Image (tube, rainbow, N blue to C red; front, side):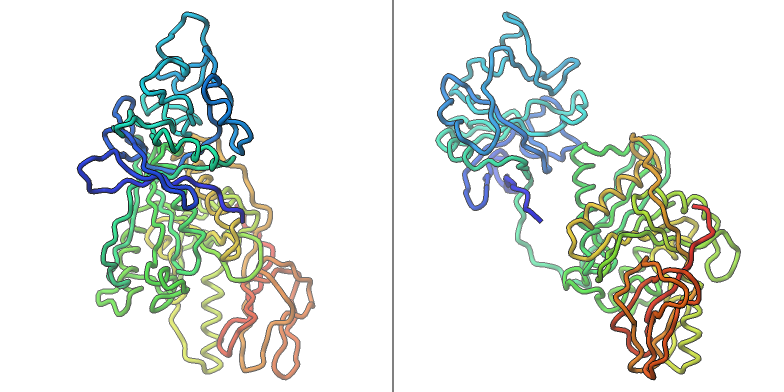
Length: 504
């Protein structure tokens, strides 16, 4: 994937002057100034506060004074256009935070070309803050421009020393972003089994459902954290505004596994998820906290990815029922949620077939587990009175998986009406019910073919081969689910699904 060119602005958190920092582009570093009041979370930025918002913002184009800087702005990669006497940047009124044009003699004091001390505005690069859908009073006219000679703080803009401006503009590239934040302080890192669980919550001012979005339940599945952190940044910058209800983001549920880049820390967090009075491992400790969070919400979106090739899909729960295994009463709501998150495939039927899997293991004499081993985040969510789905975004390292996760977050917020956005379209095309599992009974049993989850399989087709050469065939037309080419005795070789009769 092509790396997005980014300008990094960093300001120390502890210093006597809050407006001095550094600006870096691919190893080129210069001192810079920011707002005289220092940095502020983008969601708290206000007009006239002399602060610079924290966040990642686009840089789309620049302006230059044709009388003094025309030579500098020739043959650049980044688009620059000459200023004109008719240009102003609206700082109040109906065109708030927009470039507008005025007639001669009108609002001369606000023109981009007006004379300013030290010629600070001969080069101006607008920062894309609060401009996609401007909100009055949230902050306007934030630019990169020349700093004053004494490097005093700005009204919120980024100032670069006048003699460094030529170097800056030559390094700008189309599509560039500017990343503004505090400088990270080096601190002793807590042990993984003592690290706190990071939880970020945004609460709307009107009543509505409570949604929780989780990532990295398995530590090697990084698309969830990336998609979630992008959504958090958008909320902080005001690009996403939670109007109703609340959304809780848990970017990394399993920090120990995440830091190790492994699926598990001590064990699989998404198995046997329940509160334990005496926790025996890291996953028990963090699981206790996750269970408490899940009980405090109405809906869950748990973002995962998978190792092999395949298309993204949603894992949903059972129909409404009063059984002892997985009682449930929100199948309709969960089904609608799953159908509108952006993937075309939804799979259900996991826990019932997992119970059959355990019975077959026991029959063959393998050390067995309890049915609670099949309980992960979504199952616990249903047990505690809500509903939830697992989104499998695609292959672990596929950059497109992050986009699938981010789109699902936006669709979830829109579907539950937490944000002001059109209802997301129904994406579901195929619903699959898992009905059986093929168990690896002995060494030599193996998958036959290069199947992927969701692949259709005709009746009678060979799915697996036993060690003695016996073929295991599809009992009917159906689908392959969770194929395991590395199955060892006692593992599932694959699950088998059929077209679901359930209405989503």
